[in-house]
Image (cartoon, helix red, strand yellow):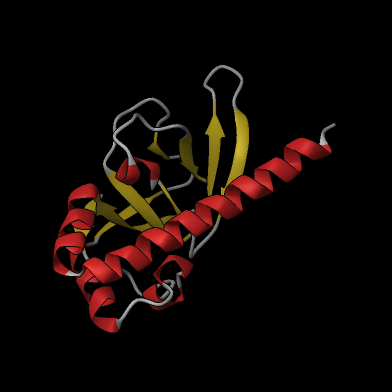
Length: 151
């Protein structure tokens, strides 16, 4: 189900990728966001499909997995985190499947919303992109540690 507006779950200013944004920038993004609700077992995005939305988990928990016939769990993602950002940063198919583990509420932003944000507030857009890059770096570092530990 797709309806406009954010939910009162995790507050926007508590989501790490919005750290350092001015209240007017948060208000701009909140106004552009759409609310998505998913039930346990529901696929939110599927590996290989095209997409242009990033998802902010407001409540609930999702599993990120790669591969269809013998899927590998990449991560469990919780409220305040996000996924789907790669489709905002580049126009390639989704790299993983994301499945709701619990009842979930998401706020989503499209690539058009990011472009509108860039045009309206370029300095605030730069902060947001830097925060996303930092989070991606943190995730990659964590995956590297897991991979190295396997020997």
